[in-house]
Structure formats: C-alpha cells, structure tokens
Image (cartoon, rainbow, N blue to C red; front, side):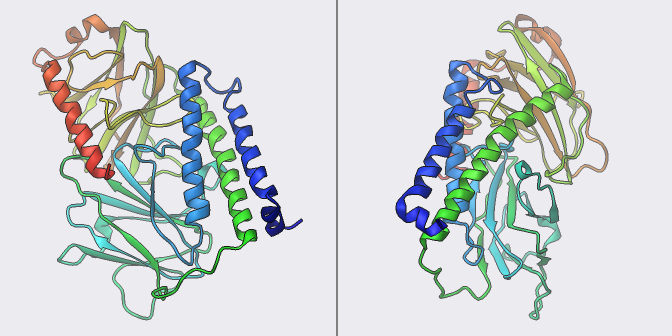
Length: 397
C-alpha cells in the first residue's frame, strides 16, 4: 500500500496518532522525571513538539514556497533555546535561489546560519554563518540577502552560497535590552516565485509529511532529555565549568552550563567579571524537557543590559526558591534542580569563569558586597511587569 492509499484509507492518520500516543508512554518512562509537575510539563512539552513539527514539516515544508516561522519562543520550546533570541527558520534547497529582505533598523545583532538538519538526527553541519555586521545594509535600514548555489548574474552585495546539504535557513535575532532592541519583520521568497502558487496537496505528500513530523518528535523528545543528563554527569551540582563553543551552536558564542541542586532554605550565588560584549546572559533549562523557564512572567533570566553590576566590576546572581531581595534574583520556579547556562557573544578572548557558592537563604546578604542594593516588593513587581510588557510586544501577544 503506497503513501497516498494509506492516507485515503485513514491508515496514515491512525499511524500518526498511534505513534503520538506511544510518545506519551515514552515520557512516562523511568528515564524521564516523574513527579506530578513533571508529568504535566512533560505532556505540555509533547504538545509543543507537535505544534513545531506540524508547522515545520506539514505547513511550511515545501522549499519551493518557503516561509519563515517562529519557534523556541515563550510557547514552543525545545532544544535549550536562549530566552533572549527570537528564532526564525524556513525550508530551503540548493535547487532554488532565495531572497531574504526586511528593515533591520534598531536591531542589535542578528545571526543567520545555513544548517544541514537537526542535532537530534546527529546533523551538526553548518555550511555558513553570518552576523548582521557582515552584511551591507542600506542607509534606510533595508537589508536584502540572496541565497543561491551559484553567484547571481545580477550584482548583489549580500550573496550567501547555498550548499547542497543545507535544508533550512535559521535566524537568531538577539534581544538584550528587552525594552529597546528591535525584532525585524523578515520575508523569505524563492526568486521567480512571484505570482505562482503551490500545486494542490496530494494524499501521498500529506502522508509523507505526517510521517516526517512524527519522526522528528520521536527523535527530539528523548534526545534532549539524554542531552541534559549527559551534561549533568559532566558538570555535577552547584558548579559551572569553563565556557566553550558547542557543536550546533553559534561559533562566535561561548557557552557554559552548570546545574543547581538546592534545598528550600539554600541559595546559590553565581558571580563573574562583567565583560564588554554585545550580549551575555544567564538563564536555566528544565530537567527532562530542556525548556527555558517562564521568562515572560518570572525573574528567571538576565542579560548584560538587565543585570546589576557591583562597583568592583563583578556581576552576582542569586538562585533561590524565594525572593532574597537581590536585584539579580534567578527564580527557580520551585525547581529543586535545573541547568543554569551562561552565554557570551563575540568576545576577543575566553569568557570569564563563574564562581559558585551555596549559602543559607537567610544569609544571602552577608555574602554580597555591603553596597549591593536591596529590591523591595514594589520594585520587584515593577521589574516583573516590565518583563511582561516586553515579552508581549516581542511575541505580539
């Protein structure tokens, strides 16, 4: 029975639903966290994976008619996303040439990459990566980029070679100052596409796309759980190892991931030298699902722009289950353990080495500089309200 016949009989749809149900059994296995909260978040995680997979592999699968779609935002989370990036991706193929365009006025930094596939499929190749400062931008802020296997006959300032192994274009827009940094509206189009429409959807194509979407989910969910556990085995608890570049990450970024494990009456102080960089940040990922915290509503992350820096040039964060009154409080959301990750962008040398100290929650202030400020309840509410406003604007909520 071919793909088309399987869809017409309903078999392809029944197979998709059965495989999705089986994934529900997978996340209930011993290798995943199993508290009541973990179960709730696990099934939410599975629905988020479905949203992404169906968007990427059913709706926007055709490289002849590409379109950007946002992912790893405040809702569709997977794979350890940065809370300060707005992620876009579109399907492409070296058979075609494409134009990406948009007004980038006010954008702090943007990174465009041409990957071969997904880390969970052990596809780590990135066949070109560029940041905004490497492109020629018009005086009015307008940016146009051409992706093509061969250099176009028509002169263009921003041609990027499209390797035959590349299957999508990935864009990361960096938002460090949440109140000021701009997220551009970008369009991708196949050159020569104007006025054309895709052919009618056939049963065979739809069946193939359902299978592709479900395969992506089946590979992704266990991959990121195992990724978290391997990283935990290397780093241990309440320590952050030296930063390094990461396969599948941005080469101009240095990443450092440690883990906290705290009792209710404990806090973890993380400190390091503040650096002169376009972007640096700290936030966490959840055990089992490798998602970011609720960064739109809780104090779970900081950037160089939002961090308080002490007079000695060092930045100090306090990871705690309840508010210690420190300006750089990282709210654990009541999680006994999670991965705490730091990023530094475009440094000339190695990233600073974070130092960590576990202290009684009641003694946090004794371990901070004497002039370190105190944040009262009203100030914290205003801080959180500003986060909510910024996230709503950024994600058009």
